[in-house]
Amino acid sequence: MRSPSLSFTALLGLLALSVACDRTPGELREWTPADHDHTSNPNETQVQVQPDGGSPLARFGIDEVTLVAWKQNCTRCHGSLGVGDGPQGPATRARDLSDPAWQAAATDDAIARAIREGKGMMPAFQQLPESTITTMVRLVRLFNAERMRQPVADGDAPAAPQPTPGR
Image 1 (cartoon, one colour):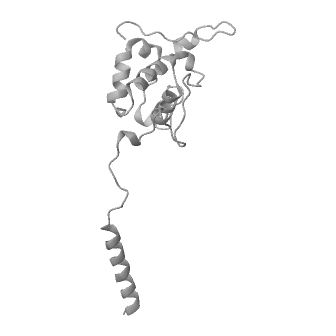
Image 2 (cartoon, helix red, strand yellow):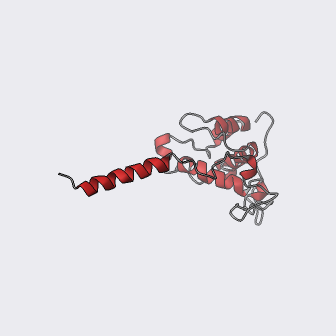
Image 3 (tube, rainbow, N blue to C red):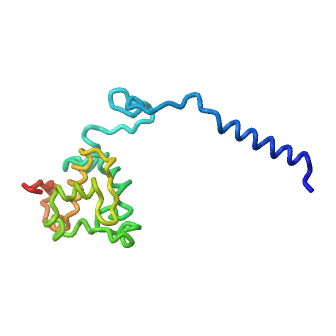
């Protein structure tokens, strides 16, 4: 047999929970675009991105935002350098983005569409701004293994990949 004080305590606890769950928080309001971080009036927790990107890839038009987007969304399958060796790469049969044959066959529009809409086991990344998708395509083009095999003169950086008509 249960102790009457234990049952009363349990009942009191359930009553308190039900009352608390029925209350609406006083500060709950609908989110508006003004609540989002923005550059005209940044707050102290907002990530600051320099105009030049501060990225070693800035000379190729790749900014920090693109690198963060790649790291957060792509490396688990494609790996850091796009060869499909991320932790989930084998399970998802991630495309080797460094494959010169694939690089020659894929258009920039097709790469952007795959990022935006997904393809095969790759999910869609519709939340990415169009500018980030565009620079993500540039980043994918940098992974081209054929381009990496080209000799580089001392002190020169490899030339940035140039979009070609229809790509």
